[in-house]
Image (cartoon, rainbow, N blue to C red; front, side, top):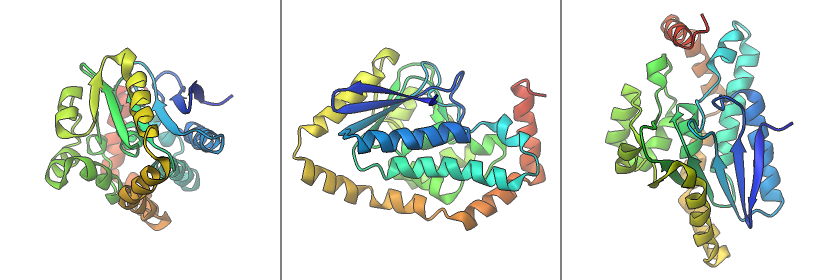
Length: 254
């Protein structure tokens, strides 16, 4: 059974992350997302809405799973690779794609949202951001670019280095999201946005969109296996492992 639910909204297909309780991104969920995205596009979807849980869009990478791999570097590499592949697939999606965020979107959840064209977030105390430094991880250039693209270099630097997680209203003010609405309306607003694009001449719109997103696609494609190997080395560093151990303690896993 897929961990991604498919919901039809006419020509728009909603892909809903469905790995309880917080849509932690393990290889199976990332793989199911990639397969569902391909199936939707191949099936003629004219637009995609990516949604998640009612309070947590996605809590990011499944850290307990990753830590359980221990010194199995090959499996760890494969797990991180599948996540980056999912991000690339979203960035390269040939039709408009909106993220409907009804809750928190830290780290990997934020990455997936930033790979979409449009982001609508629920009003309230929900937070979004690249908080990797807070859990002891360096943020790769490709991921830094995602945030830099929407908020500008100076603001992105401040947010990324601090591992900041601004609340919804500040996310809107910074440009991290494009709109706020009630939690129960995020999908509706995302679908409406996609339908507005469908009212345009499709050939010119899609060609213009592809050009506009070329640097985004290139940034993620530039994060190759060699750079991932460097990232994995950092994962095993003493200070990163110590920080991740604290995360596990907070999660009650130790």
